[in-house]
Length: 357
Image 1 (cartoon, one colour):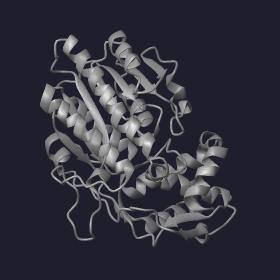
Image 2: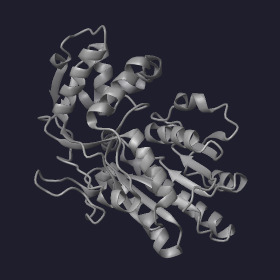
Image 3: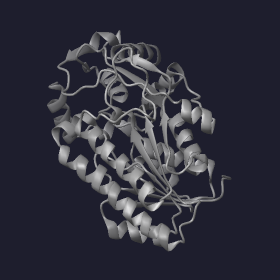
């Protein structure tokens, strides 16, 4: 399908992946109308979008995806023809502490969006060019043994945390709305993202910031858990391709071909920080590594088989783990004014609960 001008609603557009996607879309399609809806809970940060707010094509709305009247009003008023749905509670540790919020946002919120968009789509004459992209996670597939093949789109769902179970539920709803109503939905399941605007509780920014502060670097269990890392800029390009060229009703796995053990990743971050940061409280940074009790239901290994999106839509990642990590570390070193205010008392209390440090 050709890249015709769009009017897109991006939910969760002040969060990590969402805000990177908003920047990508505004930069790549400067004439498109971009409406961002975000509840601005702990991981949503309006500062992620500061440089866009003067654009005539850009609008930010603070609100909750469970608010049906708000959603319906936005779809009609802005004549939305595409939704990119990022809004979600997304941290596994928080889902263990507070599972209810995950069900409400990830399941009920997605249902509310689907219903509102279905009515809107019907009122517009069921246009074939409309799109509903649901951005999901590889965690819905469960955990892999060391020799298991990577997750493909045909891998059965087997979620192990309240977070991944809530995302699995929302995936099933999105798929059902295509099968039942013909709604032009698309699903992507991605591996672990990293890059700019990443909330400090996540592994890579947590390590970078703790190194700068001279604080312990908490590593779960034995540090041998394996993740497949995807640079957020590559992910945004993949989502762009899926919206424009993906086939409605299909699921596309998006991965970075970068399987690495958590401990090895932390050691590489320590090396980069030692190289790039002029003044550190503790050097070498690896002396800060502290092993902490493993979290409940901690999946051992994730890996994505992204053959389908590469073959069908000609997408491949641009960044290696090495180039992506270097870009990310450099960003955190030059954006202290972005992350420093996020280390709030609420964050410190949460950190204490999870890591006991």
